[in-house]
Image 1 (cartoon, helix red, strand yellow):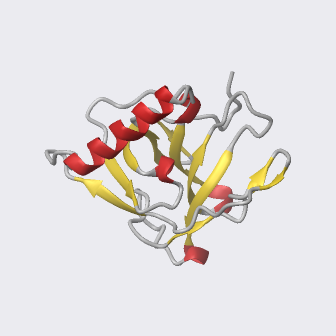
Image 2: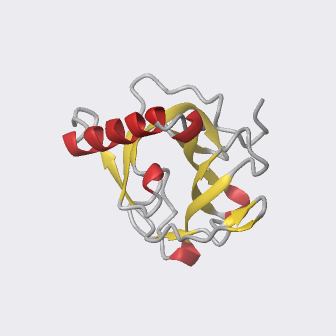
Length: 159
């Protein structure tokens, strides 16, 4: 079972807003996210709509205590229960005054390299940008194709 910050049990909202994360160095973060039924600290949360490594949920969420948006993965089954990949705050140059995640100003989290047994030997630069899709706008074919290709690889590799 997930902790209080777990995105594992978030349900996708019917007709929820959709955002695309693009250009992230951690390719698993890239793709389509859909608004969930639950708000967090007064702002909407978004959950990755594709297949991730080990089927671990990936979410975009706001946290008041840090006044920041975050992109994180709940890496269940591992000693490290969460991976905080990217953040957007005033300190990273993002405009976080609105209700939705900012389109620019994302940065790599200082905790992105933290692992249960030390620091990762790789970087997840660059940080992504986000694009809000219009209500009737189709998901770009390249985004769907990329998500399908990664999902097939994760399944084939038993990840």
